[in-house]
Image 1 (tube, rainbow, N blue to C red):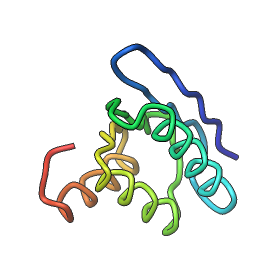
Image 2: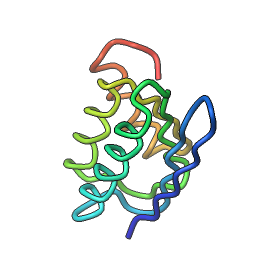
Image 3: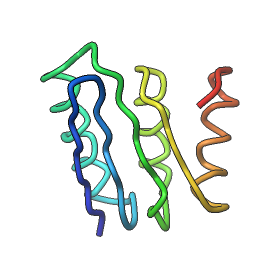
Length: 95
């Protein structure tokens, strides 16, 4: 299960994730991401992974795609930080 909370301000948006980014929840995150980007394409978006406990291969692939499209990935804890560090290293810019 994954809980997605979207915080929109005038200047930015944050997607707070809690739980497991796996299986059908990957598609749910992608829908949320697209909705935020479609409503405000120029607004910076942060994806907060502080409360994510697991990311499967498809979840990592989505996070990588979001990162390539300009999302800032923010993580805490060994698992989430490892995923973010791999993505940042893969794309050669800071998170």
